[in-house]
Image (tube, rainbow, N blue to C red):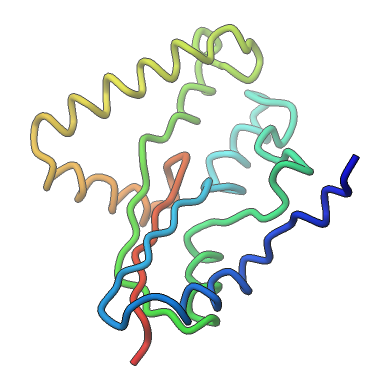
Length: 153
């Protein structure tokens, strides 16, 4: 079996390499899981969950928040244009009837509920949906975070 660490991608090196090949007018879009959030710590502190479920080595060995991704991007030559988050599915963990960590059989329904809510929000107004996702990002909420970067000039 191959050594897992042989296949590890260094995030800084990746961002630096992408900086070299992206056109000067291009936009780099990076989506990462939004981990070690205040809501996750709150869920642990209040015993809604009993472990840092988002930590899953060796599958994921790099973890990001908005601040961490900002620091990585800036240190590797990128200008931060904007961040968006997505639906904070971790909110389902506050309710024992939807807590998919304590009962994995609830995961599919949580996912379907998330899709329905996001589709509804987008159907109201894609522009306003982006405002919502930007606000969630500013609050450090959302399961994933998407950063939009351009080359520093």
